[in-house]
Length: 376
Ligand SMILES: Cc1ncc(COP(=O)(O)O)c(C=O)c1O
Image (cartoon, rainbow, N blue to C red; front, top):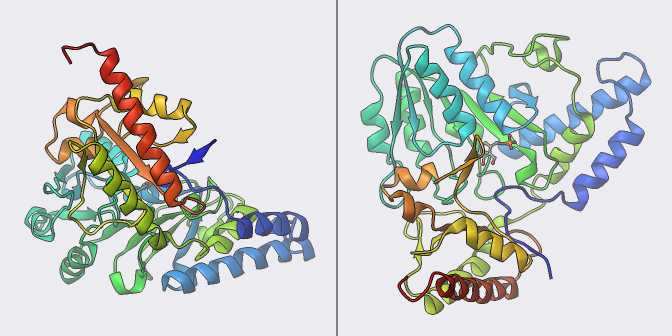
């Protein structure tokens, strides 16, 4: 039996999204920039989708720039603010997604002072530590709303208030937060927010950057001037329609009881297990666990053979597996960080899945311990 428990990586498209793709592709087949009826139909789909997203997230429709996903949205915001900067500081959490970390690391080679603020032992980057890092030279502050590995909800509102008071642009990566907690662009009052459709049951390769009114964007992909001259390229009409259709379709908060069942049963079966961010405000669907002495990658493969799709906290870079930067930044050592498994529940999962995963984890751990020999 196949069980999918990797919803933070991607959430398979919901029925409403697939219907919207079909409808947009068949009933609105034109290019939204074309003036004829087919073009106007496609333009209507994009406009209606934009209005729906604006209402959902509380922003002006004109604030939304559709992109190819969260990665592009993060990159546009970062490059826009820092493109011509030769000096100055950027304050960023050490637990950001590589879509934020990598462009900033490049900028540090150009002479910018990038400060990566580490989380506390619960996986929270505190308001105080962020504010302490922000100085008069700060050009940009980047802080994600929910961490994709630990599920920890970051105190973005408080940091945003500080940035607003001091006139410092802030980028909030809300890719993992959409659908998991209420997200309100207007209330946060930040300059930029990035979103991705495939985390909420839309399609992969679609996302949005929200830009506060009056903030100018550098066009990274100059061309036909789509998205009011802010992101050129023919709009992904079916993908955008699916993004709008998926909004509000999944209630990730309802998955808390399944996640809690999983963690409670696991603690009984494997008392040494450690649950990351257990005592922090956390996305209800996410469980990042440490199984001391085990190799997360090997466990993942064992679970895969048994039909379970879960993740390990590690990232693949240049063909080499690296321990999770999130866990390392929390002060865990390499070998402990490599013993992690990330489970993220989603629609269709049940407490039976949670129970089956505990059983599979226990038997995989026992098998691997046996293979390591009596000395292990
Ligand atoms: C927090 C966060 N930011 C950005 C991204 C990148 O989004 P996309 O896959 O749409 O490029 C992800 C995807 O995993 C993410 O979890």
